[in-house]
Length: 87
Image 1 (cartoon, rainbow, N blue to C red):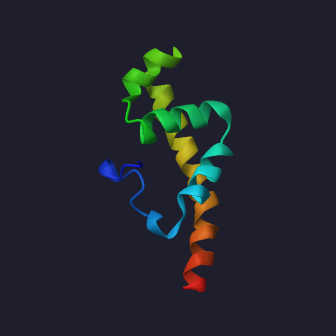
Image 2: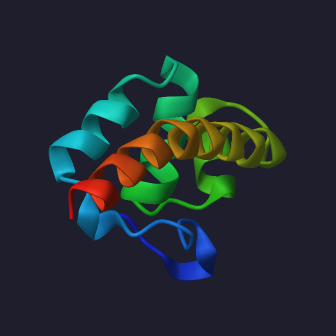
């Protein structure tokens, strides 16, 4: 489940997207970004835990998450606009 705690996805209303739409967008992320995104946003690991798992710095995990989030925002925004017009 995607968490909205700490404002990770505050500007989007995900209920307007299907889970399938969202999973498809996540699947299109580059491997490293998708891994960090899933571990942090979906599975709830901290950046420190992800850093240990992937043998990277915690700051690198944060950066990769933010990059993934930006890519997803760009992919999701047009989908949201299309669905708003259809409503």
